[in-house]
Image 1 (cartoon, chains in turn brown, red):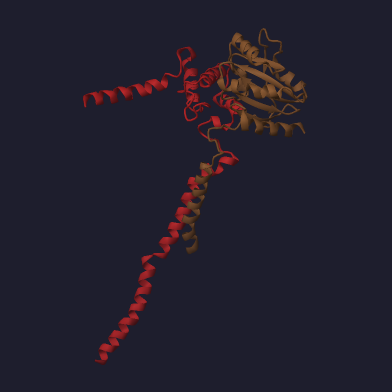
Image 2 (image 1 turned 30 degrees about the horizontal axis):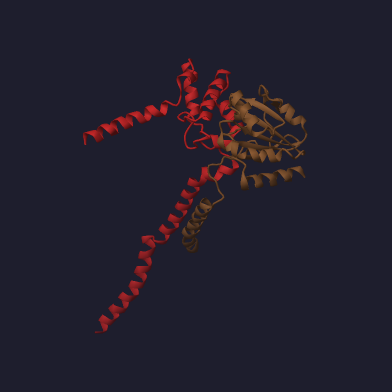
Length: 180
Length: 157
């Protein structure tokens, strides 16, 4: 009993200390919200194509019919980080094992079209989510956000923020694991 | 001094005004009962952009979308519970300010009770040890012997 009484404060302070150290770790981002979609089927959505673009629109049905590992990227012409990560997707679009599809989030038709003409269109399908409702159905908090969907139409990973540099490498690694 | 006073008075009057201003006039429902339910729900929903603010006071675009969405769900006849479920399905429990009791939040919910019980046990143990009754007993026994010795010595003198 006596030993227990003496050890309690020590054990308590060690526990609190461990939490404090964990809180200060560099690779922990407390503002990153875990996605509710992980390991669940793609949400219901049905989006029209972007007028003037030769890519068709996108819906859950089409995404499931692909039977391929797909990457769903939410982008907007008004979003600067999207511009930064665009080259990553141009590179990725050369891989035929992956279906790269885009969802244009809360954007003006003409701006989006100009943006894709200027930077290149890496997407085989582009859905036009002007209202942002599909964004909510996917639980996005902003753009850019990118999801990896496996062959069975299950969401397996979510990345928020631009996929450049180290983040892009990390993303590619996880993507390659899905392809196996 | 007077200026400072004036500043504080205006400041503290404006703060609550500003916080209720996030809900824009075009969002407000004509049915005041539904509107008050919508306000009630949105004060308990975390804005996913400015994370420690409820969507009710947040000016971010997603917060506005969610406020409108909540009102749409209410108009469609959803109960408050159904609205919360709709949001949790998309954003997870993170979107709720009050974390529900799940396996991962058991500790969060019962930690106060646990610490309290532990405290009571430790306190009870410590009090038992320091009990004045017990001490006086041992004290008197040892003292009695000393007293006896002293008294014997006195008698010899």
